[in-house]
Image (cartoon, rainbow over all chains, first blue to last red; front, side, top):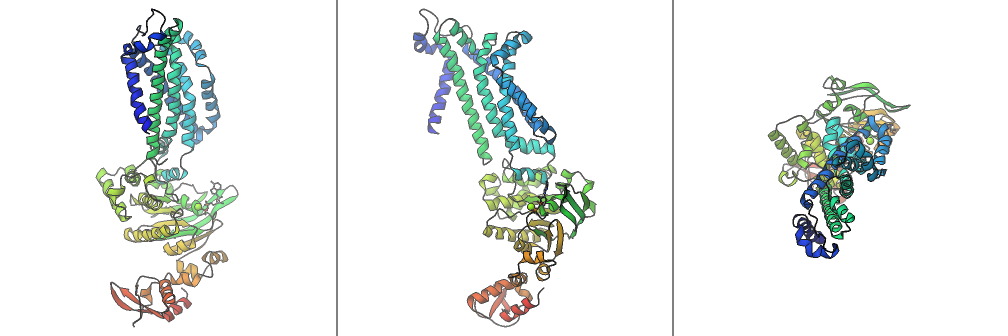
Length: 244
Length: 311
Ligand SMILES: Nc1ncnc2c1ncn2[C@@H]1O[C@H](COP(=O)(O)OP(=O)(O)O)[C@@H](O)[C@H]1O
Ligand SMILES: [Mg+2]
């Protein structure tokens, strides 16, 4: 635990500095920038790009969570069991479709901007959440479920008070995978004019400015690592409370 | 009073429970005993409608269990099972409070009831209230499971092998606690076990199941002395029958005037305990105590006479 205790605050400070005070990094990145070219990306503030990047990921992941968990609940009811293979096929397709292709196909329908990116992230995020929620809802402790029925919880009460809370740690693992995938994937949204940190990376690639690429990449990477870590901690806490 | 009226459960061609009828008196413990697969669990689960009978009916205090929705019925019937089935994400207090909360009891009444039950099961409320099930020993989890089943003062408590997961020493303690608590609260309990020893120790009446049928329903002494079928006799076990009979008779029933040497036994100990003490210490009689005073003795001769009397 000690490496985490030191590393975590360091990474948070590094990320904050990178986003809020990019000019501090001029000496570090200068050798990577082209002769006489800009070292720090200034067309938009990194802070506003970060916030918009995170908002896109949060919105897409929230929508994917709602849809995937709802689907998982439906197919784990006795009446919905027949639909499990079908829903698995659908969520699998969301995963196998390359996000770039989704963007390309969504632009004609939704225009440039955040829309196509949201759709791509949403589709891409469904599968891990669905798979994990189904696993969580089908591996509940049998004695607890028997007792829940036996003491008089209705179906709805069993779902809300017992099944979902007990399936939460496993479902959260799926959400974590989705969020991390979405954080990285969102960068390509900037190819269709979504405001994300990918804008910095793409600007760097177009002008052969490695300093830009590094700034954008580092910020995305740090967000991914820190959010991943936070969700792992949350899962551990929940699992520990349930004696798992 | 619980009336089970010719209840049957068929799974395809197999009758898991075959036309069982029995009446359970309020305030007693009835133990359903039988080998694995004899239909005990199915019979019990038909009482709170976790399983719907193929035919027949159950009445509680005259009302058919079919007259209310199953989950409403179950809130009036306590249910405790092997492996306790506690909610791992709830504290001990919240687990015990589960049914009172469903019944919308006021908060302070629930809190008082939780503490009362924890004390009844010798668990200090301040220490245990806010623990999670994973932070309890097996015996404590099992007690909380039973406390949860008792929380709303149910008309009836159903228990399916509640002590099955406990090691033998803790199991004996748990059985004594249950007997004690049942006497104090006057609860009506139906308990399932595959252990005839447990049935005889706990039951006011014992129901023996064999292949889905109820083959004998009688007080323990009668089950031991007059087994209705060879199967019942096998379950009781011929070798230990006299000892089992003796274990049902308290010393107070055969105490006689006179003195005896050595360590006294309490009046509510059984003749089996007295026999054991006599044999172990080479005595022909043991003194009997009640409330700290010697009230007489029990002799080996009296024990033998009683054993020969049967039930
Ligand atoms: N859901 C079910 N479907 C088919 N057969 C069952 C089902 N539940 C129980 N049985 C059968 O009914 C019989 C009695 O089972 P059970 O009541 O669990 O016995 P016990 O509790 O005495 O061990 C067994 O033969 C068992 O295989
Ligand atoms: Mg059973």
